Length: 297
Image 1: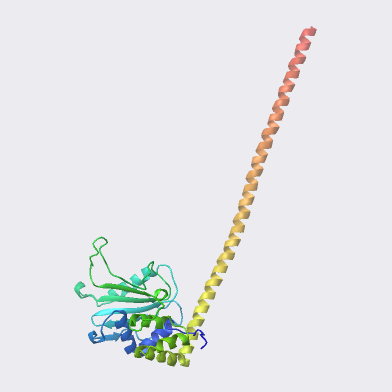
Image 2: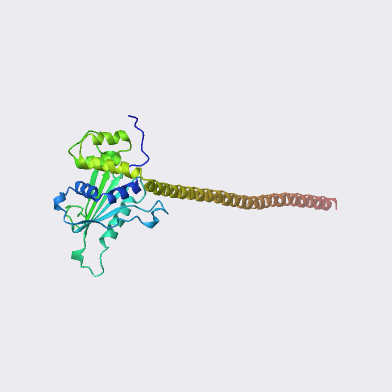
């Protein structure tokens, strides 16, 4: 089988959002496996933002995260394809927005536990482990301040290559990392029902013309933004060159004037020195003539 890469993967934000919103049972299983919860422990599971935000077509920077209410906690599931500056700060900001998204007057003791799950295509942390969890800790005793914060990072570049049929976390992550029919077939051979259903849902969704149209619109938006950024950079570069040339010309003229003034002053000083020498010689000659006239008397 030819290992041709697919146009869409589970790390495609539009596919990620639509597939798991359309199949909440898969989403619930995914969240339970990533957080190591048992499905029978979940009494409440609601997707809080199942609709696509209107602005997702207008800008590629619109994040298509999935927010859920899982029992008494808020869970945000997000994917991140590229590395970007200040990414940890953005994750913390998203946690903070969810933490304070409660009715006014809520008691501090009733603020929800907020869990943010990040699936990262690129490595973002300086460690060898593919899974990292951050909570507020005291820096020397490692005491946990409270249980209201939990930030998870699953880094696809770090998952082991060998098979782990019984490890559902690794199976989900390999599904997110898969990018070809051959990759999907390797996962399907394991005979895990959730994986089979997710892959079948993938093929159904990517064959839907409405989905492909939305994907093209989002891609076009990304291309337009990239072109606008390139044009702005080119204009900035051109303006910088023109300003630099103008400043360089002005500096050159100023330096030329300064050098001219300096050269004029130097030449004037030299001329005055010549005149002074000539005057000294003239005075000496006059003195010599006076002496000769005096001797003649």
